[in-house]
Length: 220
Ligand code: SAH
Ligand code: DHB
Ligand code: MG
Image 1 (cartoon, rainbow, N blue to C red):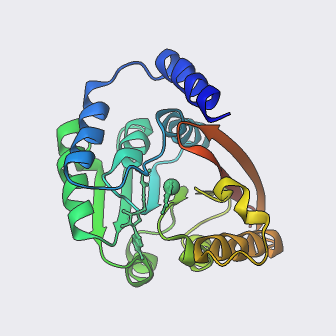
Image 2: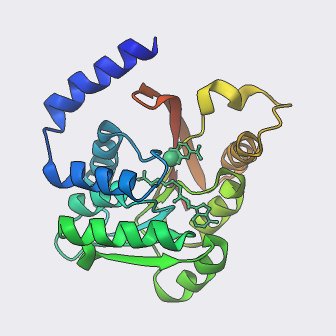
């Protein structure tokens, strides 16, 4: 099936996210910088754009910047005056992201914070919260803690999106020894148990294979 998923992704991608030299240049810079090719796909980027627009988000938090590809999609969808805080552990990833964001012309709307997100999130509680949309996409082992912080940094109506919750279907294997899978399973359990959230999961296929997004809205 991978072949048809890729061709369909390219079909809709070509129609709905036409050639964008700046985005292509960012992906090339990531590759040249030795970053792993684990950015969201272009149609997934357009999905993040959609979420920002329908939620009317002005303040976005991203956990896991990599080279800033998803950050660019989020930033471009923001209204005038909107801004993003993006958290990244790896200084080299952050450096590549900074250059990409500058080249695309959105660095002025992005605050990049380098360090382990679990160390930087508590600072945001005092300085930058609440956020209107929170995109969780860093190390999967810490997804449960990221959900905890997302709730702390939210308000009723905040949209919480988490990438990579399906993991080629491994999520349904309770005894899977992959810590990423265990992180996602604990995250999903918390989502389900949290009365302040209404949540669902959207399974996805495409050029990156089979995965999915968890989508939640803060109720109260
Ligand atoms: N959102 C990006 C992809 C992020 S990949 C995009 O779609 O374009 C995951 C990123 O999370 C990597 O860059 C990795 O260095 C970062 N990361 C891993 N552990 C982290 C941590 N503890 N705190 C912050 N970032 C972390
Ligand atoms: C991985 C991380 C991601 O954020 C992603 O979208 C795909 C893969 C990974 O760590 O393997
Ligand atoms: Mg991801």
